[in-house]
Length: 298
Image (cartoon, rainbow, N blue to C red; front, side, top):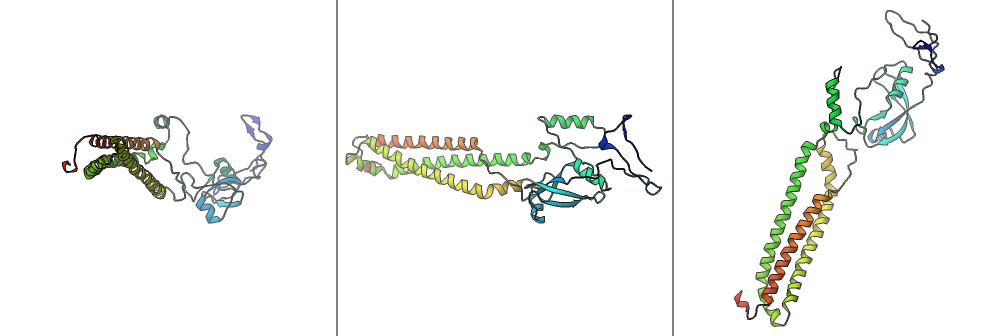
């Protein structure tokens, strides 16, 4: 069987759609293909490789390679256009190519043309679009949004629990500071009496006690922040990756700081400890200003 001119809607086709080929069909091979003019000149397809696959085949950007399509066994020539940590849906050992280019190369080689199994839709209302597709579908299909695949419903309560635990730890720390301040006030009662006898003003004693508490608490806050930051850098990324099922090891995890709750907790703790320091200083000032008090009256 020979094909001649190609008509599109009854009109002659463009020059790049002209066909002049012989197709043999039989009872054993009832179908055949006739490539149009220029279809045999297929440029290498552009491919994005996962980092693990690129390392395995020692490929760099711009390198040429060949891969085989399982459907029909077509050998497709490709060029590495980019290397990504992971390819969506395939991980670090996958590759990403344009479906139209892949279909053209497979068709020209006489192999089976691969068909897409899913489509990605970019929209500002994913839930509404997914519901609309599910209601109006005419074939068997399923719709999945980012929220459906996300582990946020599982991780969200755990993160909230960690923040609640951090808040509780700050509350207990403030209580400990208050208890420590009260214990120091009792233990250093005699010091206040002696300093007053030596002529040190009550206001100066209060400022000294306030400065001592401020230095101790400031040092504790700085040391705690540094230790927490080092711990987060060492563990947070791996914990985040472990929390997402199927996340490839090559997928990079950005370390970010949730500023708002961290700042709220720090400001609340500093405000509480500042109030405790002022109360301690006021107690020292009042004690140092009391005339006639002796150490044995503690």
